[in-house]
Image (cartoon, rainbow, N blue to C red; front, side, top):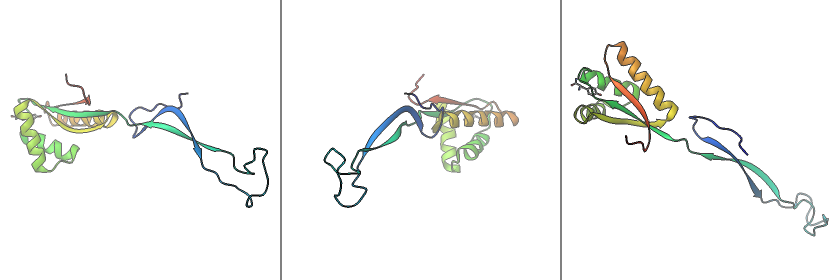
Length: 141
Ligand code: TYC
């Protein structure tokens, strides 16, 4: 039975319900009556429902090289949107400058798409063509 489907949440419920037996001891007195099954009153099986959860799929955020965005601006973007230190931001920027692209971080789909849009909107505001994309983890083309 399908219960709930959420896109991009922290942890996604997949819809199946687990029924867990829970230990239950006698609830009254100490070994008094009988509930016709010989085990005494209050010894039935208690069940508890627990929705099965699944980790959300992850997305990589990449930045792409271009010939026009200033290096200092790329470093600034990595500090501002991805909380990189100046040293790490500079290393990532140089990697992208030489290799053409680089992974900046891994996020839920929603976070990754939001970061990519924020970076491109911000860069555009400053007149730079910096491109940033969100790709599913494991995607290689
Ligand atoms: N290639 C750019 C330059 O020489 C610098 C740059 C680095 C641009 C990384 C984009 O994602 C980028 N000014």
